[in-house]
Amino acid sequence: MAGKIIIISAPSGCGKSTIINEIFKQGGVDMQFSVSATNRQPRVGEEHGVSYFFLTDEEFRQKIAEDAFVEFEEVYPGRFYGTLKSEVERICQSGHNVILDIDVKGGVNVKRMYGERAISIFVMPPSVEELRRRLEGRATDAPEVIDQRVGKAEFEIGFAPQYDCCVVNDDLQKAVAETRAAILKHIN
Ligand code: 5GP
Image (cartoon, rainbow, N blue to C red; front, side, top):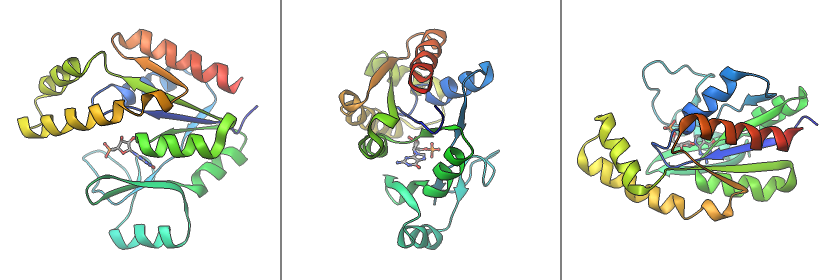
């Protein structure tokens, strides 16, 4: 039955986006990505309405006032992200399932709202040490930024028991297969 909700959350650097993209690439799973709103700046290659709806602080506040969000969170200091009711409704009303790539607090809240209609999936790093190695391997962040991310990851991992299922990403193809299977079981 269409119109189901798939929530996927993970600490940064756990390969969540890679897993989602791989499932889309393989095809055969009826789900559409809900485009969130954020007040952060677009990164190179990101398009308005595709990666996010990029809003000014004022526009974001306006959406909150209009009650336009299913949920929103200040994921990083001053940086807000929110799931738009209009996106979830548009996708569900067109007869498809919706996938939400959202942070742990948002994930727990949305699961609470939708109950059995939603599946919440948490992508875990094999270990905090391995996550640190991966973040260091990217060589894009300063050591103190990596420390912050690892600290945040430890905090986020604390939410994992509240998710319906946890997928450990120690082997990408295995993690993709497990995530795909959990989604298919939920939507079919
Ligand atoms: P990024 O800035 O790297 O694209 O995303 C940062 C974090 O914000 C990720 O953990 C992502 O899952 C989360 N996020 C993106 N959209 C939403 C949303 O609509 N709601 C919540 N709660 N988190 C979101």
